[in-house]
Length: 497
Image (tube, rainbow, N blue to C red; front, side, top):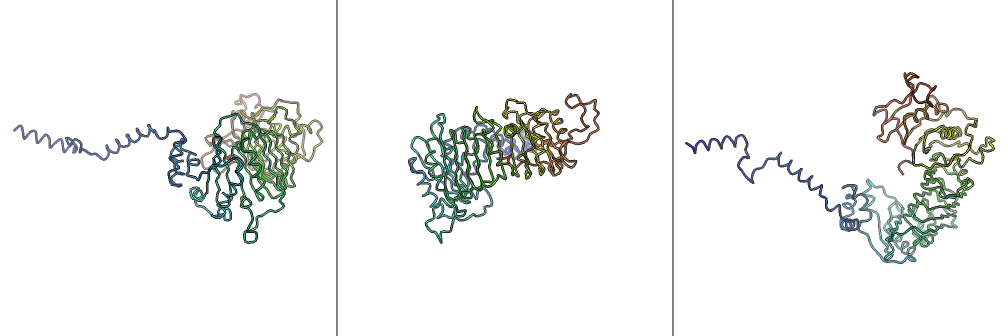
């Protein structure tokens, strides 16, 4: 009787819980998957591989196929960028004096592979990477050069130094006497150097140890169209004196640069981010696209307005411009003392402007309004308030001078960005109403991409608490929905550089 009762009780338990009493063979898909996910999550918290040093991870990545190596950049922020220096590459021990010759051999090989003579279309960045050619030149204990040839005629020369020393000042010099504009085909001139097929050159982290070799090599790029110089610590002087159709120059984060001398025939795009150096510019062509991001201030304690005279003349025909308020004031300082309405300050072709300032106050707004009155064709205005931007010592300058300019009839949108209090936005927007047209849309954009539009409101004057805002028109910023925000919000051409 007792045995039958035990069997019946066991049968009822199995009907209620089929896995009861099965020990290790018990399996519930739902609970098992949950336990497995918990274990995976627990293991991901103990990611010992990601804790390894960069050189070990790069060695691991170098053993992977190229496509898989590139995909490791999506694992986490820790892995992002490691694949670029960890890809398996050819290595060669050379001396500093051999850099130019070895790069020549490297370009000859790239030319034979068709990387310099054709520009294929790629469906993705991974497809583009697979067609790159890369080689590493070791300079003994001092560092190495990573050279990458892209299939679109772009050459990257990335210098790495193994010594953590303070940067030593050096100069880069690029001169050429060529008058031609396009390379000839090998069918007619089989001895044409492979250097002549490089259209875009990126120089990254050049130091005083490699500067002489780089300057010597630069003279061999007879048909270069685009030069980018980035993070060259210690670069004190840059001199460019060329006569062929070199059109684009970009300089980023070379914070020791004090002297910049440019003499070229055809530059129309100039992007600079860093400290304002003593600038000399001579060209038959005015800049059409100029990014003058000098929010860090002047590059020298003894900087004077005369150091920027040629720069001011170079941007007068620009269509796209980034300009700091303090830089503009320096440029016009000598003319404000004896104002005569000089036509030099009419930017007749400017269509897109990014204006950088450190705060919103009456003086700074006066400078902006003064500049806007000289831009009759302006279509888009982006005002970026960055509190870290350079604060120039204030001087007595009269920004209330009247220019013969009607309202900005072409101005479609004004976008306020950066760090601003609500009262600052209201003050700035109300002052802009004096120069913009009725059709101009004034919007404010937050870091979370939320958009507010400045428009007429029903608020009472008694609700305005800030003294500076008393007596203003009844306007306010109204937040837009996602669909309306998508239609109005845009980016300046230089924002994502």
